[in-house]
Amino acid sequence: MIFFTNLFVSVKYLFYLCVEKLFINIILNKSLFMKSLIIRTCLFLGIMLLYSCSTDGQVKVVVVTDFGDIELQLYDKTSEHSANFIKLCKEGFYDGLLFHRVAKDCIIETGDPDSKTAISGVHLGKGLDYTIPAEIFPEYIHERGALAADRLPNKDNPEKTSSGSLFYIVQGKVYSDYELDLVEIQIAEGNARNMYYQYFKEEEEAMHNAGQAVNIDSVEHRASRKASAWLLENPHKIKDENRDVYKTIGGFPIQDGEYTVFGKVTKGIEIIDKIAELETDDADRPKVDVRIVKVKVK
Image 1 (cartoon, rainbow, N blue to C red):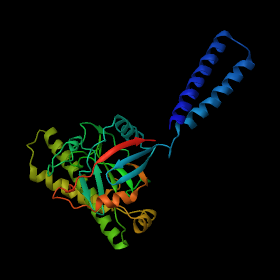
Image 2 (image 1 turned 180 degrees about the vertical axis):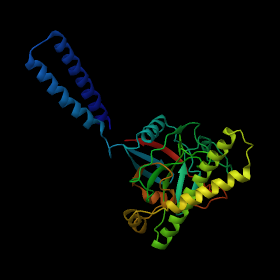
Image 3 (image 1 turned 90 degrees about the vertical axis):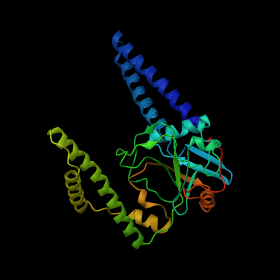
Image 4 (image 1 turned 30 degrees about the vertical axis):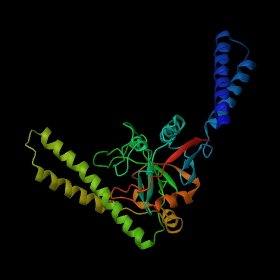
């Protein structure tokens, strides 16, 4: 990673230097040959600059836990999430935090700064007080080992912005076609519910703007009718290639399209399984604390 960073800085410096020389030559009306040479050099360095920016698969993070090491690969396409995660890791933010939420066959979660000193039984799950814009891409699904950002529910967060620090890793399970059919129905109902909230707000605002007294029953009826019509026109279907993943590798498909996936586990998936097996309380907090010892950026 240091190599790519140094390459990027060096190429960027040379690129700007050549551009500067080009403008000087234009101003001083130097030879056509010199101008052509500098233009070609600028183009070459520009291509190198773009190439040196691409580090997909190079940025990896090792999460050292009480149960063993988990290696994560971050995605370039989810640049804001990856950059924020790397920043927090380098600052040592995650060192000493607990996996405060564990759901077998689903996920393990961490990132609450209060968990570092939390006593047994205390409810946890609050991240840092800022959010990151959603970076949800259809190619990044919640397959086994996916790394994703947690967030507030759609009712309070229709933009699906992510928590600044809370993240989870998918343990998941293998699904049958029948189970995936049920997931499709659940996702469709969830989408319709989100549309209901949107329509409710629109109807409420329309009445208010028209100078009418807001009738909640009427607003609910109209919003419900619109959401039902939307659901009929927009049934949810899991892609065939994603079905194959969930029927073989496994995962947690109900989250797809709702939460930002910004990386994946490359080593240590068995550590997620060990943590997911722990007994938990009513708030899904493990009864035995599992702590992040240290996070290292490669």
